Length: 275
Image (cartoon, rainbow, N blue to C red; front, side, top):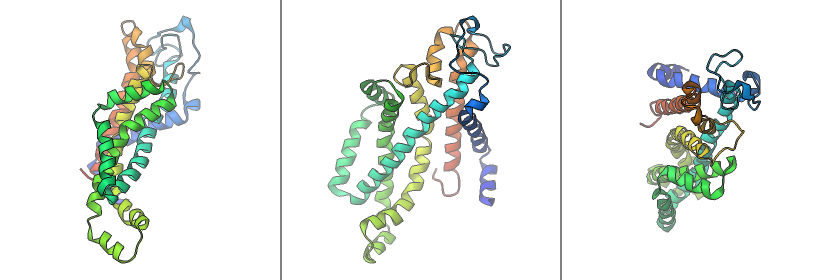
């Protein structure tokens, strides 16, 4: 408890970011109770109402749907597309990286050379290419984003494992008769998971931005499902009519991604974290 208080005092921006993310997550989880209206209910008579209109706190979108409700519900998809691919890449990438790093030799070379192919493409281009090949949809977006982050996590896990396997306690474990899987589970993973987790936490904001970009291009979430990137696309035609309303989904993407970034920086500066 004392360590947590000290961390909060040293990292006030990270603590504030955690509060912001908790509020956004809470609103998304309890959207049916938080949202004031049905996010799919449209009324052409109420289209593009400004912020502060009677009955519409944040105005309405291009077909008269309550924007506050759509932002609240849209947080569900945006957070899902931000967290799940990173979590999947963390699990799969750690497993692959640890095995490759501990085995070394030809297996390590094979894995790392295959990953070099993915590194030949920028993250945005790779995400668009994979999503375009698979087709639009939530599942395909999750697969595309996971493939984008997997090589990065594998490389971090492999590098950390290569350093750990040279430590004396690994040799002592082998000499004591411990099996390979026992060493990996007890001695290697315990020292590798921390650095990989801290690195992966910084990818969530990138995942959110890439997911929003896919939806903006029509390769992610399909309408009328609310999602911040898709909402930004559908409202772009209203930028000259009602710029404040049109900018709100982008503001949510910015605030949430910045909160994830600041929180990740705070975690790196926590006791036991890595800079």
